[in-house]
Image 1 (cartoon, rainbow, N blue to C red):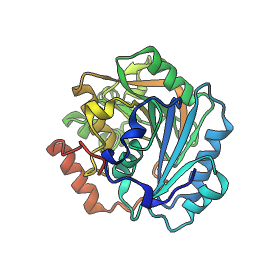
Image 2 (image 1 turned 90 degrees about the horizontal axis):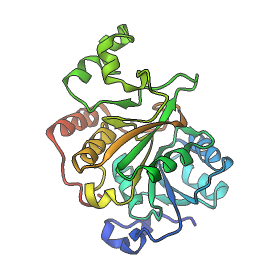
Image 3 (image 1 turned 90 degrees about the vertical axis):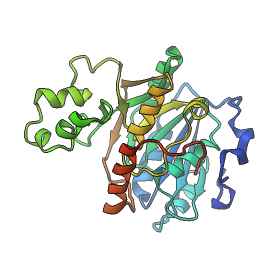
Image 4 (image 1 turned 135 degrees about the horizontal axis):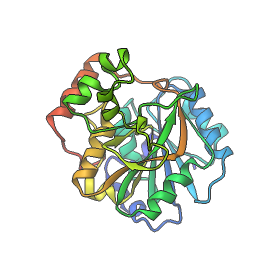
Length: 282
């Protein structure tokens, strides 16, 4: 079913009937897209070429791309529920709008610059089904060359600023002990699931009921959206877990954005200032 931006509700209240959780859809895979037509096509192909034991739906929300992304989805993937925003509303708002339309018991946030490996979705849902205390689970992300990305970390703090993946210390001395304490993918037991401060929203699943307990993604943020949301999940009494049995290739930062330096700085400021209003989708 393909739809256009006029049919996207502005708030959760506009689509209450779709949020009951009574649908037989287990997983709603949500992909926000902006000007990444070819990457999006590869991502969708990887989803549909795999097999899943769970019934799933795919929702693509396009941020008013100019590269025919939306038309490509409509033409080549008629089974996708495709939506187009009236402008580039950015990652958080676009995903929030899809939260209100998704029918699954689990919401799988997926970047458009990813390739989903066979069994990745099932591994996350299997883990969530067996661990009701877990509110969010993240996949193991691989670079294109097969190396492991720094996608699972402690919650942002002074130490992560000094020793995290973007720090000069880590770039110069990637194997230093202090960085390993912040970048949890390097743990010796990283082959098994473990709790983490936060996991990357490039491929992470959340329970539907979290929206009621935690709220929506913070639309003020362009960066640290996943760190902020995972922090709120922990504060609400749920756990965040890294599940390395779920493997996704992430072609990092190729997915298209209009975020400029000013918005990046504003996002960092808003993250450290604290949560804003997140009770509604936009």
